[in-house]
Length: 254
Image (cartoon, rainbow, N blue to C red; front, side):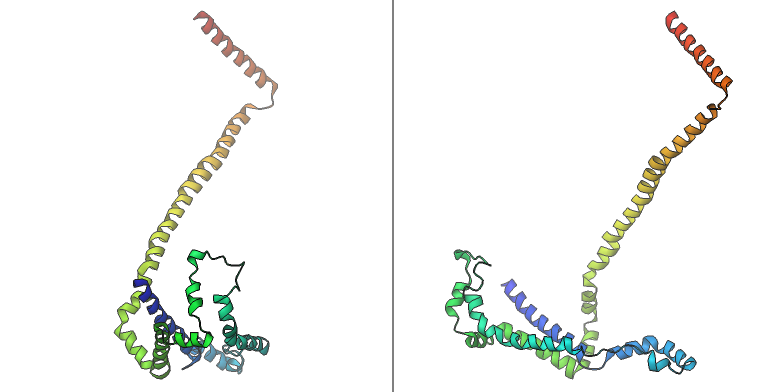
């Protein structure tokens, strides 16, 4: 039963915040004017003194209705959407409209009982008005209408009365802070440590750049021996032969 009551509560909450959003956006005092005025008053006032056209041509862009190329198609789509369910609810839910597209096993066909009880779209709609979900949705609509259209002060008093729960909900129970500052922050620090120590220090500093530095230093030493003078090469050959003979004498003598 918990799932059933949770879904019913969700119906009320969804209806309430949907109409709250509608009323706050399209009804009541225009809040965008206050935000624009507070954000640009200083600059606009300064420009108005320096330029006669400061307020006339540099104000904020105001919301406006969509052009007819957008509004007319929406109206034409909305009109049939009101009535299409009346003509298609039977074939779509109880008929073979989706045959070949959705396969339902006979032992799991939950719509058979519904199809036996279906008496037409009008009776179906009237029956829906007797169900708790309809009245909970209507209750959410009525409460949002009363508070945000007729008594906005109720919302202000409720915000003060339930300040702590509202803050907890707005902060999402602290999970965002825990994730960002904890897991994500720790991951960022670990990534920076790996980048500085492992990548820049070990891989680039020791293996890549270190091997290049070692080759460069060895080449510098060998370069000192490659002078291009013939007597230096003859001296190196004689020295090598002396070392080779000394090794042979030592080995044979042993």
